[in-house]
Image (cartoon, rainbow, N blue to C red):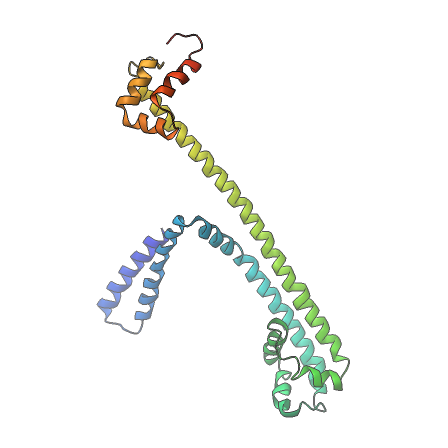
Length: 250
């Protein structure tokens, strides 16, 4: 339905742009055309392992989004703390050639957000501003240490555990779906078997005699193919029929 909707939208936009003679909004038309690449999703049916992997990835999108939101709130919290309590004491701290950059990083919450993202998420550039600041103001190590613990050891590990939990849930659902597919295949096989028996029952009395069984094997290609798939020959049919015919009624 999504593919059909995108195709219809593409046609409508193309007609509208042609009629109006507008070229500025043609990018919207190009985006809608790019959306038709969703047809490639149907190819995943030929790659079951890849399809299950894509399902696991899509199931992890929600915890990833909420985890990013929690990380953002945590970084905002520590940014406000740093600007309010650390920024006023930076005037006497010598950052060397990076003095302007470091003081600008602590000058506002916006710049502090970028600084903490670089320091706590990417884990990059601890020495430029942090080391001189901790040497001059040792109490600031408490702020940076607690911020690192809450972000890196706390929320990031919590996000990973949430993703693993969602992946396990999706895997259980995948097992259930595969089990239902197996049951459906068994049901179809049983229906095929009933149709084979109907083909064998030539007189329609609901019973299959040895003559009908052999006739179906030699004259009904579907019956023969089905029995040969079970590695059953005409000689085997006589033996199997004798085992099934308990009362020897034929």
